[in-house]
Length: 198
Image 1 (cartoon, rainbow, N blue to C red):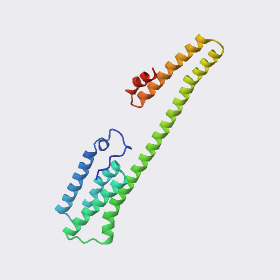
Image 2: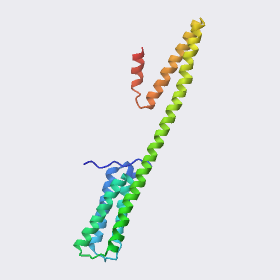
Image 3: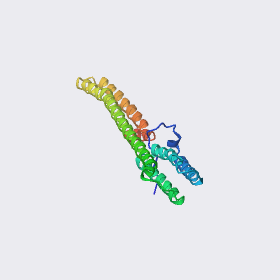
Image 4: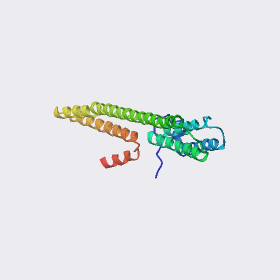
């Protein structure tokens, strides 16, 4: 089973986004350290178990609601192991005060991360649509109007002017298409398209 990749809603400089293995390793170390601290001693009243909010929050922010919920369940499982092995008796309120905040944190922070990811995706789609709209306008202004001008010149009998306008439009079309290909990260296709056109 593959681990989920970090979501893309945080800054590119966020270490837990750039290094997912390090994120998982950090969360694992935190879980282990908190569990060891809890097992090493202290009383029932000590709030060591609430330290699980740190690895749970880290996983939820980096990987979303599912991973955050799973991290919350893991934290609760470790609390149960502590309670059973240490023969700790907790009343319902004691369990609720330890379990619910951790589970809710993982789910709510993870859900907020997922929502931000969806918003970011929608923003990128809108930006892409706006870019395509601008490119369509540029194609219309640069190419269609040039071809119309060449057609008018040819129909009027101005062959030299029409051919000159048509050649300029073809050159402009090649430059425009080459620019679009480079923007798409396919720079190697530019010359190939040019050869095919030839």
